[in-house]
Image 1 (cartoon, one colour):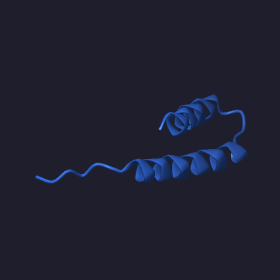
Image 2 (tube, rainbow, N blue to C red):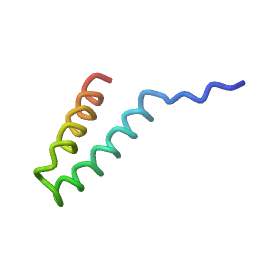
Image 3 (cartoon, rainbow, N blue to C red):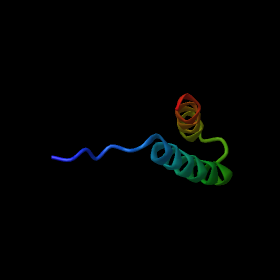
Length: 49
């Protein structure tokens, strides 16, 4: 069995990609509270890593 984990750099890249998509969705729907909360979670994940 091999370890399929991500490096810290890969994780940060994934989070940045997700944040870009969330920001794009927020441009279309800026008042979507669920998207805002999700963006905040991903932003804190990026800051904590």
